[in-house]
Image 1: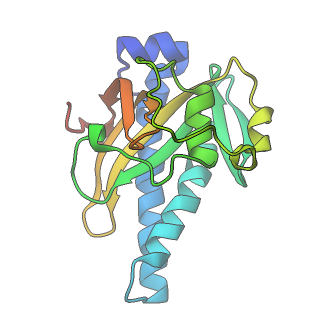
Image 2: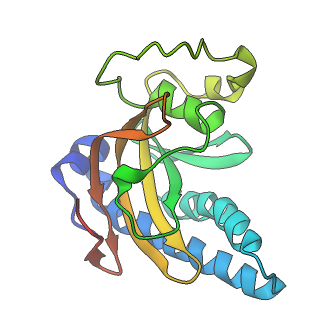
Image 3: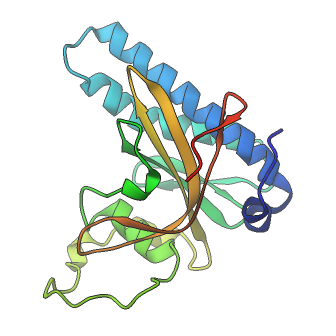
Length: 202
């Protein structure tokens, strides 16, 4: 199994090494399935690949992590996500080209993904700027998030991947969401290995 960093061991305990190896393998399988789906439907656009990857990333992680000691599934936003050692693992394709994970930015400042990061990510490092944006519309808050206990923390698995180039980077860690520009502000991030080799370290 993979060798785990100090952060990974402190976060996940005895299963950290297994996670270090299993998570990249799951995402590589998800990419292969999405690429096969695209080739199967012969579309001129990449819709089949993109939508397929979004769906199968959760399926592969649920299958791969389900056998780990103490891992348990939770159904959120129509997908099965895995909780390991009181941390929900959430995959995020942040780029289609090889750019640093510090470039990761959400499309929206509201919605399920944004609210998940705000509720279960780390405390903001700086005070929230008052830019006159107002409070979140209560209709945007997803009631499904109430299924996650307050003491569950979020670990983001952020990756850069495209159909042609495949998986270029995978990193994991914790980040807050800066509402004014939707960038992720990483409190900690580190690479996960691809094919036994570490991805580009930042």
